[in-house]
Amino acid sequence: GGLEERIQPLLEQEVESCCNYDQLVEHLLQAGERELARQWCVRGFKKTTREAPGLAASLQKRLRAMAAEEKRYAMVAAYRAQDFFDHPSVNAFKDLRKVADKIGAWPQVRGSVLAYLETGRRPDLPSKKGETTDWPLPEPEVSFVAEKGRGGRFPRFEPLIEIAILEKRLDDVIHLYGALKKSGPTTWGIAETVAKAVAQSHPNISLAIWREKVDRLIAEVKPRAYQDAAGFLRQMRKVYEATSRQDEWQALVAELRQTHKAKRRLLEVLDSLGGVTRKIID
Figure 1 (cartoon, one colour):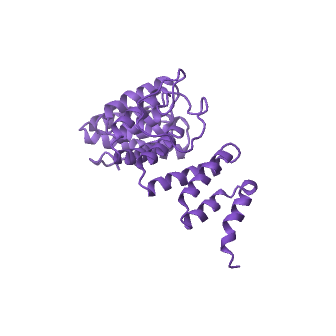
Figure 2 (cartoon, rainbow, N blue to C red; figure 1 turned 90 degrees about the vertical axis):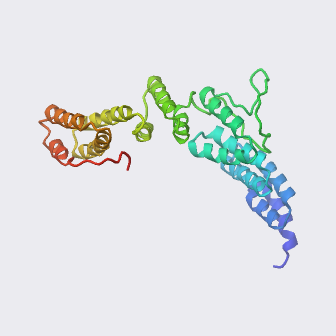
Figure 3 (cartoon, rainbow, N blue to C red; figure 1 turned 180 degrees about the vertical axis):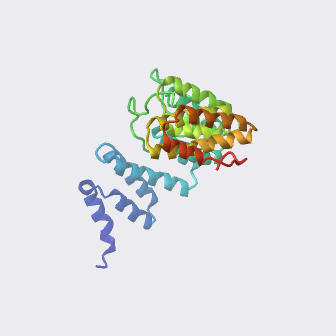
């Protein structure tokens, strides 16, 4: 209606009951009121962190974006670190590394976040005794409360393994995977990730992982499972060929034929495994 000057007061009036913080902040940013927009992000976060955590996360992301636009990279890194602590993953690690590199803080940040995955001790928070750490990043403008047990069990082996793969620390990958197996049942996803990552550097580890999967699939006694097993057998064949161990590959196929000679559909699948390639990873 041409009454644009009434938009902001109306949004501010409704924000407490309607929680339209995103709309208000967007309007303020378009009007060039960046500091006021920041204040409403902080206020909205505090109001919604428990009742509407999704909205609070959106406001936190908005604050991070504003910091990036203003080239306040230390603050951006602090928010990326929060993301990592809340949901550790190799992608969150890469996002944190990218921005921490900009301010020359990555070596110290990297050591701290890896230690967190090992122990569960957050470097950005005081210890139970009130002791501080050498954490180089500032305190973010807003933060979710770090609830006890929220981060799961530690060490967090899967992200540790994925990060070690990213950094090509393959001996560490093997060590961490061994510790993970000792700690309890493992998911197939991380086992397959390890097998593919170390196929060239530690072929016997890859072969053992794939052989275990093949045996489990065959034990299902289902035609579809036999087809799935064939995929892993092909991976094994590539490793045997690349390491000049074709005789071991032939012995494996012969063993499977003898052990499962009554499984006609499996024998048909084994017949389809002819041919070799010197490429280990597709």
